[in-house]
Length: 487
Image (cartoon, rainbow, N blue to C red; front, top):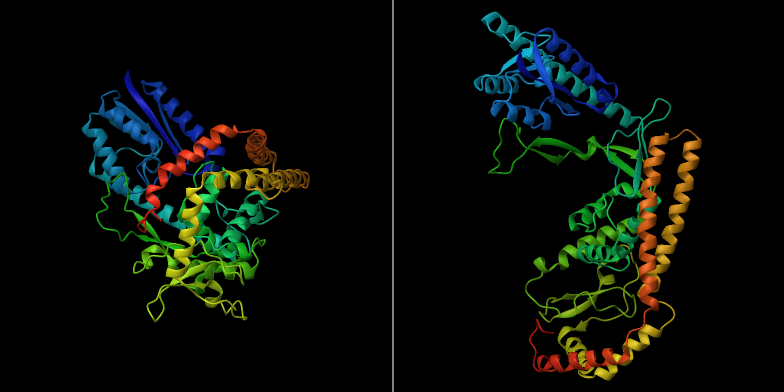
């Protein structure tokens, strides 16, 4: 009796749900029993939902490792296309297994010991490749047709939305996820109204304790920039915007188990398919945000290395309440100018304020800061004043924001129940989304408790006073004739 292994594969979740992989395993076990093969439970290898166009599959890797270690004498597979869709991959794996002294048996096609059998195996593999190309092309054209009819065929919705999959009675569509949509509106507000950079937005998100959609604690700057550039939030989702092409990057090696790398490039705008979706951001806010992104790029340190501006991003125009930026101008004198002077297209009325010489305002501000840092009693007085304020502190603002978000979660949960009662979503999806809402509610409630404890805790006055005095003594030497970095 030979020690054998069984390998089965399906390439889609639908095939997995229809138990086609179980039928493969059952047929292979029956064949093993009738042909005197011994198959242990640990030698049943199954790849659920893995494409046959790739060789980097978990179960197949474990099978190849077991053969290389001499554990198996034979491998049983239903058909060659279950091993791989491309003949080159089939030949590579078969040669590897045979070289290790392991026989391969296909139930629906012989391995091919004679030239005629080998030719038949190669022809079968060619037809498998042709079938896969047909399936891929039919799926692509079917998705394009449904997109032109207003139905979405995407696996992951943009942040701020939830994707309802296509059903027989209703097309696929995006609906607003109120919890995430509030975060999207806040991000656009920070950019368009507060004129923050992407780095500052990421910093605020990380400090707030808000997690990403996938539960991560840290937000990525590139993710925020892509979010701010995505026009879907104005009410239009563009399908067929990108296509895959061979990667143009150099020094990228590939193996048989890892096919050639692919990159995504933009298609011509005429090929985009617009699909109407619910609006999260109005058009005016979107235009302001895009213009602010352009200004942020122009004012970035990497694009402004000729002059140093001590108060960059800190000065606010007294007339427009917009942030001021550094600009040398034609006279080569460093100045701070109001942002509104560059946004006349969206703000027809020019700013009535004047630009300020950088040397003058920076010196005045530094003198004020130096005096403040030398006086521990003044620092302590300001700290007590801010702590005793009963309204408008950052902690209270965050607590109010969290309370509003908790109320939003309650409304979203009620809408899910209404959608389930109207047969728009199924029970498993309802349970999954309600579980995510419950996790988010627990996180927000935990943060509210922390803020409440911080508000109620009283710090000892003597210890705080000593800390202030020690800080002022340690920094006093650095305040005399400091360089730009110290300031």
